[in-house]
Length: 155
Image (cartoon, rainbow, N blue to C red; front, top):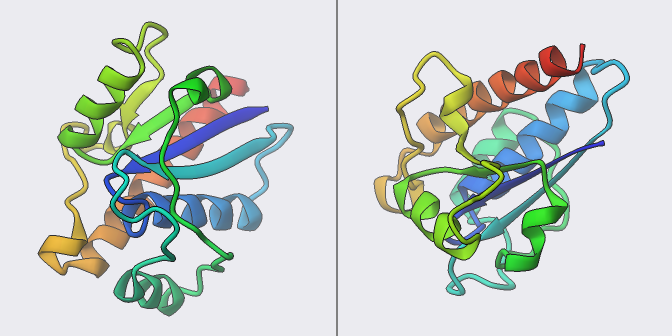
């Protein structure tokens, strides 16, 4: 089983969107013999216990992405060994995760956009930019790329 953890600042916009987008892609597409577990978390404590931010939720719904009963949570140091891929959305998340995971000795922490043709791109926080559709499209592109990477590496 492949285990993926998506991480952003508050776990109410980007990481939870990536979680639900990836679950949708897996549901819609046959991924062969690969079982994939998906989760999401925050690096901060600010939004713990909150649901998906309403404008992000509406964007997901406009694309027919099924949404579960989300409750924001913070990533824990002990989870490092539980996941194969720990996916950061921007530099702040990468910095916080690298510190939390003692420098990422197994090189599990990556940017989502590493799995696209825009490898150096980060996914901006729509909480501040208000660009929810742009963020959705970036996350979708990243999730498609990550899923293809996983399928190719398991073939």
